[in-house]
Image (cartoon, rainbow over all chains, first blue to last red; front, side, top):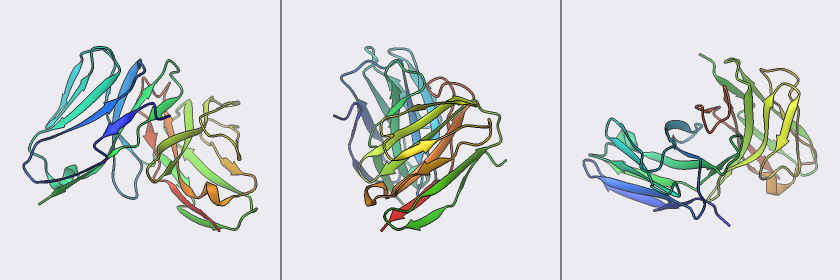
Length: 111
Length: 114
């Protein structure tokens, strides 16, 4: 059973387009994180959200945590080739020391 | 700016062999962890440590051992390698619990078991 479902699994878009990827669960998370991973490297943390309904912005990236703390979304405005990578969400189910990761969304932004 | 250093970067083993994947961090982080990443499976937690001398199991601990004798080092041992352990292994560290603090990852060890 996958506790964190990410969609879509793959996404290929043109430079300048907007996109949204999703992270959903039937469980309530105390906090949720988004990472980006590039080929041959480890994941890099983008943001942590902890409050239901919270919205955080990081330049062209907007992260939202659902009111019930069961889902999250990542919206990218005017995507650039440098945004290409695997986007992973991760959450804790009450244990601060054990993060559960989703399978990721592989984003390709074509010039 | 070393951060989290993993060695080796690549390794090929035969079934039944044992080996140790090394992980070292220079940020004085208390929390360290090992994940494996398989195609279509995301990252799965193998073992973690909240400080020197303290380790605990994650989601997929079978076939792996860990120890934490120092704050800096957190090696992962494969006791008797099996083809199912072919994967990319990532070590990570954070100053406190990873749900509250940024987790820093190494660049991974790509392991193939023949």
